[in-house]
Figure 1 (tube, rainbow, N blue to C red):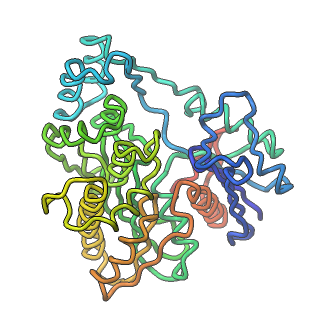
Figure 2: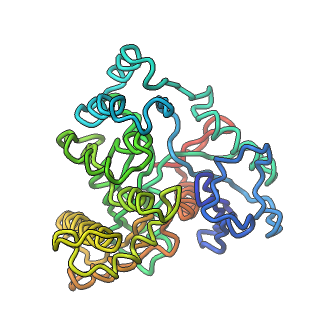
Length: 398
């Protein structure tokens, strides 16, 4: 059985699984010669994957897509009004950072302040966002397959990718996923939050099971502030207190603080590394040139990066310790998600937790979600899990 998994967000990729074995992983950026290529941003009407033609890929038995969850109520901020205008920004920050928003409250704010943003529910009759449906249809047609599967389990796919590519897939272990932000929630009590960190229990022949998750709504503040580092510091003083709830049996933390991955993007933008906040690796590199850090009284590009690197290490060590406490029967930890590209901190985890072994997903960025989606679909089919639904949209998660 041959299955293609396709990630249609940034780091667009295609993974091939044959009889349960990952045989190929392609990234569209290599064919397009465009770094971080994002298929969902294509606007020229050409929605085919160049890599399909370059690699002469044939028609698979099954096709599954991975993406962010764009089904929930979407906010479109009036950036012309809000960017660089602190008088207009401040009340928006108060509403979005100090208060746990519900769907009803979002609708009330939209009525009270129609100039701030517009609300759009872009879910179609297939249960998918219009943009996702269009992209999936085009690729499926190009590959030559009519029915396909689609789901939004972003962090699950990261965890599965790390597990299936690890040397430990025949024994229990822990998977930790952390990144700038994953799937958008559609909980009525916490709409438009993104998963930013999660802990998973991995065991042979079954999908990873979530044990703990943290979500953030900070991405909206970044859109308003144009990812300004100074404004990011301001946000820290107006953020709401974290709220912890149990959802579907999983301890879930909701915050308005950004993830550490998002912090690196914010700082890369603020320090002029790039104009998209995607030069997190440069910030990691600059950190090695810092001497005493901001707390030592030296304030420059290198010490800012160093302070952020140190803060990220300590923050994520607390998550690793939480994972260890939840799983005392294993000493094997898999790291996945975009922040796992931070090789400096990855090495330091070995020193902080000397009794544990670490494996870093070789495709930790979003390109790896194609591997995770295809792997879970293969296992569900082999186990006889009912994955059949209507044509064009199916659910592959357990």
